[in-house]
Length: 448
Image 1 (cartoon, rainbow, N blue to C red):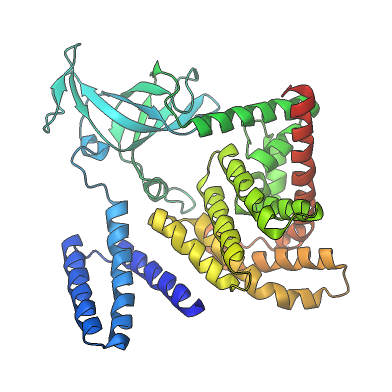
Image 2 (image 1 turned 135 degrees about the vertical axis):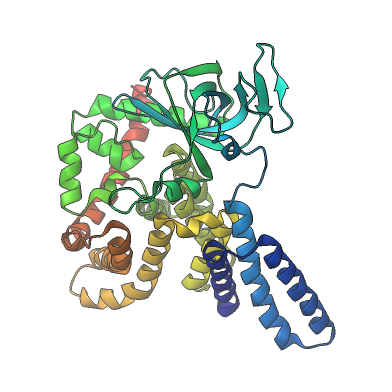
């Protein structure tokens, strides 16, 4: 079973890469796919099964290319990117689809656009109509990265708002090599808008589960602030919930200098540690692996939603869910098969994930843990079992991602190799005690 699953995933990944970097016309790829599919059927009917296998892997590669091209580039004539040429300020109505972030005097959020309006008729591309106020209005699609310079936030996730401003295309590479345009495009965002006016139209159009999770998060934040002084409360909020709004700059810089800044950003590491904590907790209670897995999966999903469904966290949660699901079906399944299935599942949902640093770091780290941990454990054989495993897993993950860290962040945090060996077990304890204390506090204090 191992080779077909791993091979299928690798060929699908190859197809996505080809779709990203080879500028082949979509029609050419589509016709080639149809041709190979037809040949596969003919060879199968003639009993030439070995040729069918090769053609199937070619089809998977082409499917990856087609899927990427379809998912990545905006095709609809009503997509918001088609209105960036307008030189006038436009009124755009849509839904806030993430938690707005206030930094300094600037608010940033993502809007899913529904309508766009102008006064002078510059929207005449077909399908527009005049609204009651005499403005030309058109239904549109797409997402916009909104930057509001008015530090007044009376809106939240799920609210319908109206903004006014000029649409612009995000700039590409910034100082340090970070490509802002590419980063946004991988989230399906092709347009920015700066505004000094955000008008609330209607409340509460978001996903009820997300709204409930955000309310839970707010209660947890208030409780942490109630129980702990600064900067301890700010550090705990960052580690547990990814909330860095009140984190002092000097504290943040200290973590960065020691190569441990990543623990302040909720990521796949946190999901992995919480998975470990939950597995140990439920197994200690004497629950079977099957029941433990069924309890752990929804709790991980809750944590992912609680922290804002950030892509790295969502991917790590999916990876854990696929892994637990595979082990429920077959306890002897290869970990590389589980890793391949998780990658295939995530890329089938979002092929753009392949080109994000978080996806690559997550899968390379897990692959490194699977491959290197047995060898490293032998080096720490004098240590107690739990400490030996902790050190081996942490070091395996760090060694695996060093090339990617050098490529993306232009540095190799050698000091981090040592500090992370010490900090990872500590973070595990902080997360375990932190969530236990929060659960107890929410019950006894009612959320503070």
